[in-house]
Each structure stands twice: as C-alpha cells, then as structure tokens.
Length: 367
Image: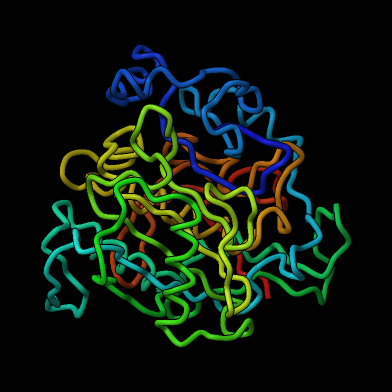
C-alpha cells in the first residue's frame, strides 16, 4: 500500500504489484495483468501510484522484510481529530448493502438478511462476522483494547486510568440496511461513499454526534462495481476506511448534520479472488470467503483504533495496526488463522500489539 504524508485515508492494499513467481510462491494465483502492473517498490516508496494517498503495507511474499522493519516501529497516538482518537465505547457496526444490484431481500433460518444478487454469500458471512465479535470470550478483539485516547500526542503506551478502545461485548452488529433507493454507482467516489454513510446514520436514527461517537458504517457495494477504483487497473486495494470530513476523499469531504461519521469502503471482495485473500487460510470452498472476513476485520480493527484517521494510532510511516500485519503468513502468534466466535469460525488476520512490538492474533482484554 502506498503512503502519503498529506492524507489520512487508510487502505488495505490488494496482493497486486507482485510478480507471478512471487505470488505463486506465496500460494496465490497471479493477479490480472492490469493489476499486476502496479508499482512493486518497498512500502513507502510508491511515487507515481495512481492513488498516492493510500496508506499501509505493500505486500511482498508473505510480507518478507516487513516484520523486521516494523518490529522497531511501534504505534503512537496522533492526538485526535475533532477530539476523536479511538472508539471508546462498545463498537457499533452498521452494515449498508448499497444499491438495487443486491437484488431481492430474504431472511434465512438464522435470521440473517439474504440477497439474491450476492453470488458468493458475502452478506450473510459479513453479518455473522460482526455479530460474532465480542462473543465466545474471543480475544482477537483484545489486541485493540490496549490502545487509548487522552494521552499526549506521540505517546506509545496507555497509563492506568486512560480511556481504552472498547470491547464489543455480545457482538458489534448494530443494524443492517439494504438501501434500494437507487442503483449503486459503477465507480462511486469517496464523497459518494461518505454521503451514503451519512445517509445511513440518519436511517438508523443516529442523528447526533454522541450517537455516532462509537459507530461505524460499513458501505458494502455489490458485485461488479468498482467503488473508488476497486478492481480496476488504477485500484490496487481491497478496502479502506475514513470519516466523512476528510478533505482528501475523491470528490471532497461530505457534510454531515450528525457529527463526524466513520465509514468503510468494503467492496465485493471476492471479485478480486486470491488478490484479496481468497483461500489465504483455508483451502477449497471453505476458504472462498477468507478474504471477506480478513479484509473486513482489518478495516474494523483500524477504525476502532484510528476512528478519524490519522488522529488515532499509527506508526511513523503511516501504517495502522492492521496494515503492519496484513498478508503476514498463516499461523503462529501473529499470522492469519481461524478464530472461533459464537456465530462460527472465521479467517482473521493478526494486528499490531505495542505490548510485544509485534503482530498478535490474541491479547488479554484491557479495560
């Protein structure tokens, strides 16, 4: 992922820009030729990238060399934006399935919303993921709770009594909306995505800054669309998160009468196959949606630790907690692996822990 010193938008870069040989060695199919043409310089050196404002890790084979660089570079607190640094209460995730392309709604036997225009079943899997966070005594979320706000800008630790990231006790899923008022744009701009998130805040009745303080709006675009250039030659990312007030959004900042609104651009990840994590952890049909849960979990973890980028926790090169551990291999204390929630077992990636100066898949919950 590229890094820009002038932008706060954080993105998870796709497994593109790798040679076919490196991808094959890492266990991935080669990306389409147009995608593979992306710049393959080391992280932080993406001069000439079509979207140089993207932040995060540019993956190499199993992130080779990234761990050594990152190990001496813990996250530090950015001082907050509009007084917001991290999600301090129990995180609330609102899912917005944007556009008539999602098709006819239904409800399955477990009570999840189903959609006829969802060929891979991403909608149900996403609901299961966010409903499962904070259940089954899971400690994947515990890694994030070590971070806080109310400390000095540049601080790398949180003293006793500081306000920590909240734990999603009992599940983070707070609402689901299929916005069928119009078709989702073929190539939505950042401004349009932010506007949809603000619209969703109104739909869910979160019409004050206080109501949105611990909320995030996940804007899910239907298959075949390219929000902000996803799955195009100039894309090179799997998802990103931001807030409505970021002036570097394509199209500019979006106004909100409801206070700052944190949101995620979560495209139809399986449209990019292994380039965005399909079968990264699990083989065959079991791993078809690995990338969905890894990518969406990645952005969730970054939102709650850096709600209004980059006022929360980033390292000196702009990486957020999940960027530093993306495509970091499988297994061990910090690699991607299956995590059991009450709603099922999900492929998840590790995230950065300042406590051990490394990636962790599990950490005791800090209150």
